Length: 589
Image 1: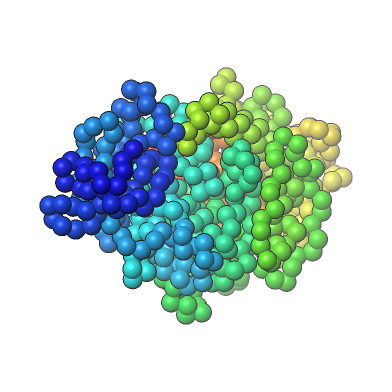
Image 2: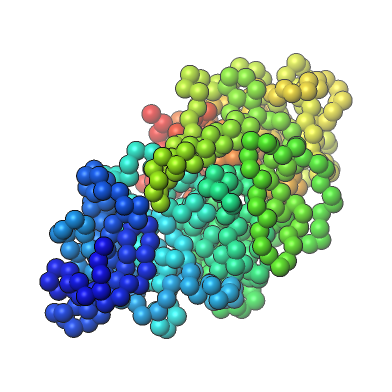
């Protein structure tokens, strides 16, 4: 390790140590040629691993950091001046920022929402510059944000960034990042630009609340919380709460784009007391009631996406299932304002619309996902113990490998009222009819009425073997696996049945074919959402977005093609507009 007075590459004299991290030590140094102060990063493993293969991978990763940052020229990204690729480990020479890190600033207390929004915009600007050249940061957190003397934020430490189209340097099964800031899809194996936005949202939450909402006493518990537990309602966020609600959703396709997020943060930073005006191209087609149903708007969404409806408070919820013994209980979060009792309830205690997950060999429902989640998190902790270093390995949960997920039984169909006066309906008669329990059903909506003529109650401990869907009119079957749909919107299950039905009614007015499915019934979708969709049939994702274009839905916020299957590996089959030049993966192979 270097020491004060050492001269690196015959040019950079180490003055004093500024700090240490998972990838080395940062020094204040003097450039003896240009007579200026610089920051020099001595890159070496904090765990002291010195095997040749690890040193080779680390050196390549450092070179990639330098090349990544050299491709970015932006005031909110730290500038890299030089790299020294000699000796037993490399050194990076960077711009020296005389301020301190955001983490150090937060030691003095939380930020006001307006200041947090300004900082968030600056970090977002740096991320947008990185994403524009194909770079993902993958570890956005307060410790990696430096503050200039004027208070502006600078994003640093791209040492774990992933360059698109470059060979992966991450060792097999290894996921790099800080567990409490990781996006859920990163843990599951996906690597998307939207993952950086989740991390930014989690960082902003910490900025205003002063606590990390996903941090638990162990890495296993933290990973389980990130994957499965609702984000607690922020109490100090003020106007920033709605922006956090938009960012901290587990489906990356439902997070706002970077452009829209910038507008939302700008509105909070100005503290105007009003939201950014909605997109008029959608507003003029929205139904008259209620006004918040427009699928795309620059207005921050309601903060009830955290799982707590806005006042007045809802009636008491019926008790949910008992907590699962195989998942650790969340550690109480320190906060001066107590959360509503149901805000921090583990996901297993949330009310549902009954057991919709499959019970047979083709089942792909929430219980199977939770088991996969627990196994995945357990793998992460095992890898930590084996590696003994600051990184951790997490293996993506798989499927049974022998089923194509195609069920043979008839689907259970629910009928949803799309307007006042619509009669209630019951599940279709026959041996596959199922009685579902719906806490506090919406008037005019029937979700499987127990004892209804022709319906057969499901015996205790069993579930229907096929996915269920909400179908206006009740004539069309739920979609099976192995097919494309046009996803028009996804509503978190935590917002309740009434919100789901209002959303369906609004979209159904524009797209009469619209139906709803439960995302947890398909392994290729993220669980926890009601997905409003058009069933097609569509030959591929491009056909789905072409259908949407004919309905006037021409942006990814209004429609994307999604592939339904029993394989989590199919999550990446998402086809985005425009139809004449689609993005993503539009044909299943």
